[in-house]
Length: 258
Length: 308
Image (cartoon, each protein chain N blue to C red):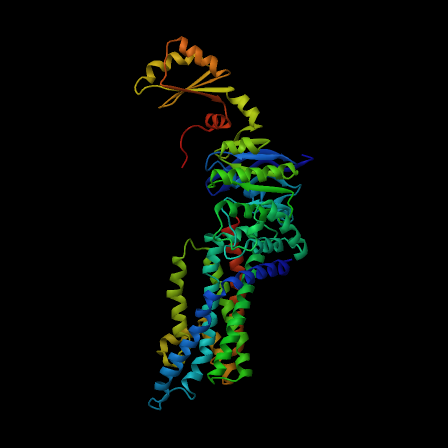
């Protein structure tokens, strides 16, 4: 029953998305391309023409692209599990409408997250194509990087759903983007190898979830060595997804079933 | 309790320290329209949520469609229609799509849903709006769509929480007409409202709640007979002169209520009472004689103090 009812939540979300996809096109597709152009091509030129003592053995664009794939997945997952979830809980109260039917809280949460998974698949496949077009990876290796990117996005989506379930208003969403998501975006090995950071802060950076997503995506897309044992990374992200989902079900239940 | 669709004994709901529903008993029978009346904060919506099987009770016993919502919430909800206080439609979707996705939540097949949608759009007088987006529709249309959506699964019991709050008189009367038709078709309705005219129009039986308790129960007519007189004579006096007349009016009717701006005489024959007032030489500035309404009962039982 869990799967059937969750499937119905996915179906309804897809129907809404068919009406609203235009609004999300810029953020999901054009932003990564803009980043690739500005950072990868523009800044990358400077980096590659640098002193020759660079820590990179590959063109900067090639280094950056898979990291941005993981970071984009994080942004998409976190975004899709915050504002739309708040709308469902509070602004539109569409979750109340769903819970008045045989669909229960676990099915609502799992369905909502599954839909985010579909969106992530969509976004990362397109992005992987863009990477290939920029000659940063091959079609096959680019495709290999899609599953870890989706997993990264889902991990963030699950935690974000749990977080949003407790929020009174959208200020908390802005705050977590400003104080958690943005720093992760900048300091998780997306734009430079963590070895560039001061030694004392490196362990903290290694402990962040996005670092593991970046490590998996980069290793697979470029066929290079992983920054950290990929088994650890997969285990980390899976734990985040499972723990986040269970927590989200619990907190959403507390919020909506009063 | 054999043919009762809802059966509650000593039903309680607490939110921490706050007692929202303080041990109430009631039964809703098949085919009737049952009302919960009360001022804000009386516990109506909390009771509705418990019946709707989306809010666990704190104590007491509750059976909905013969089942315990704590254990069979999902099965119960499959046979309920719920119209919430605020419309919670998917605004980006069309009228048709809103009904379609809702039917899917109930596990209905597309074929069955589509047939049902055709009927419901006619019923809700939205057939010309079938493919319109919901967002720009009027408040009355959204409300009718919400009601149509609540009927998609052909529920055995329809729960309406303040169905006409915020609608203009035309929209309210159209909605009453639709609800009356449902009632004639044998659908069991439970309504909460704080509009007395709504309760008088629709309810076969109702309870008046105040501070989490049921203060009285009966048909609108029974309640009027039990708690007030058949008619009311309302009199206004020139400013400052009310006090001097009030004392003499007390003896002219079985119950007299003195308000800051007027005096109400509850009586069985308002015209006769008006004659008696005139015979005393009392000349009010204006007089209105009218039938007693549920509102008189309501105010008598729940007081005139404003609840915020």
